[in-house]
Image (cartoon, rainbow, N blue to C red; front, top):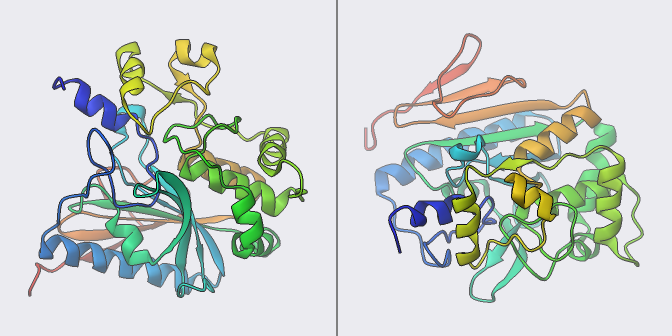
Amino acid sequence: MTRWLRPALAALAFCLGGSAWAGIPTFCERSKEISAADQDRVLRFAGVVKKELERSGSRVALVSRAGLDLSRFGLLYSHAAIALKDNPAGPWAVRQLYYACDESRPRLFDQGIAGFALGAEAPTNGHMSLVFLPDEDAAPLERAALDKPLALSLLSGQYSANAYAFGTRYQNCNQWVAELLAGAWGHLDTAAAPREQAQAWLRSQGYAAGPVKVPSHAMMFAGQFVPLVHVDDHPIDDVYALALQVSVPASLEAFVQRRSPGAQRVQMCHDTERIVVRRGWEPLGAECRAMPGDEVIALAPWGV
């Protein structure tokens, strides 16, 4: 595989679910082991995230993680899910879609916050975003996320990391969350074509997926060689324009903020020396730089 093609294939995988698989080129090889120091740092970061969830007074949160490096697409967060205070798998466990490599199919999976944080590609730095909704929107979202028949009715049988947001051939992790929001707030009839209904409701509410700008036609072409990336579900005009309508965490957060002006956001990031906590909608950049008003938590060297 040529040197330029390898990173292109990786970057085209906008969403690789919640699994710990991100190998190249199959995306189903085990990720390399991280050091004890890196694991300790990420676990301390996860502890801060869980503390924010607990102090929120909420019972549900839209949670997004920076997993794969999507900077060439102008994106920070890659993977969204729903955190539930009363998740049967444990307090504030995350309910999400992931790709089960051993079964070659998407699955729904509950995972603790620590495991969710450890799914990031680079353990030396990480970002997490939490969005808390007003009670009138939070309560139906909690019910929908815990309603297994509804959640499963919105699960596609085929996975694509860059699935078209308004098609039913494939689905990615963020698209399942988008359709779950529709299931919570759109009063769907799950007995008949629930995914089509969910997408129709999202369109009617002005949901905008992406567009994700692909940097070059060469990268778009490279996607044909990645098993979990497809373009055959996208409108041909979008493919030619290098602008794909793909559900990403930024799409979900923008939709929630517009629908629920009272929604509150908490972002957290870490590097090797500190954790930064920012409350509010001002973006927390990839560099993890604190601004006035941010909370900064020092990370002591591992073992100290």
